Length: 335
Image (cartoon, rainbow, N blue to C red; front, side, top):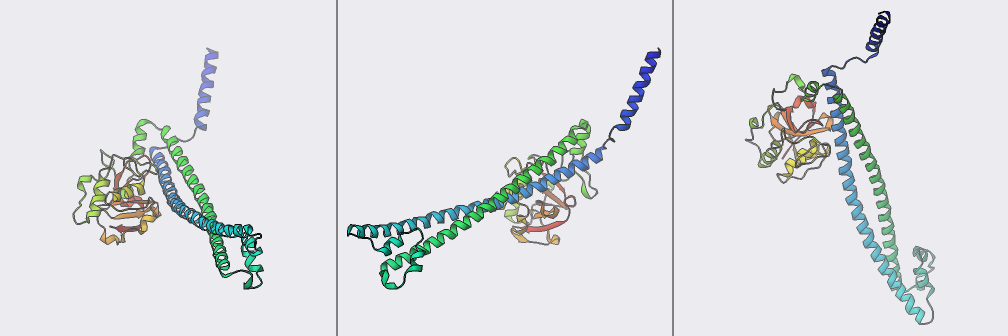
């Protein structure tokens, strides 16, 4: 009995010590705030990735054009060198090669012009051909230098993309770690859409507003087509970084895809959406207008009644939520 009593006392002491050293229990509200913060940060990093990708694609197109121009100019230079070579061959068959022609065939024909003492050293045809060759070689060297510079910029953007991608993965991993430590009931509560501005989500579904409540009257045919496309994805298509449809989306990917259905080509980048279409004021808001907010990190389509149809962040599907949830408006654009 003495031994058992001692063992029990020890167990109680250890239990008390463990409780004292244990980390404070995270409330559902705290977990939700952290998970939402991580997911919003991941969504912001996604737009940084999208922006770098858009720039990288533009640079790639420019580099491709430069390389085509370099190849064209190289062909011209090669042709002109071949002409000089034929002149040299003809003179060789006649017994000697004019020193002027030998110099023109040197690796640096500019040297010839610098050393030529007077115009009598070369005939007019040779002088014209050499001038053209020198100009082509200078142009070719400039194109090669520009291409090298653009390729360097490309490498910088690729590193930026990798950094943004790593940030996305880190934030989502941290959020998932928090979710894994919760009960199934808590996970449901944490994954529910956040209600900014005092709004609370409905008892069923994830949206604050039904697509059937969206009034499409009085808007352009372009905006109507885009809205119908986006509305078909509400509560269906999940947020995925880099997603641009038809079944997964990030915020700018959804807007790009929806307006693409209306024949409008948009960039896959929320910051670029600040400049598309025509700017309108908040007082003139109409359904289908493109709204950029969260400092430029988010973009969606106005659904009316103070609501935004968008792909909010990882963990949610395309949704309709209060504009107030997404902070101040940066730009409103219309087609």
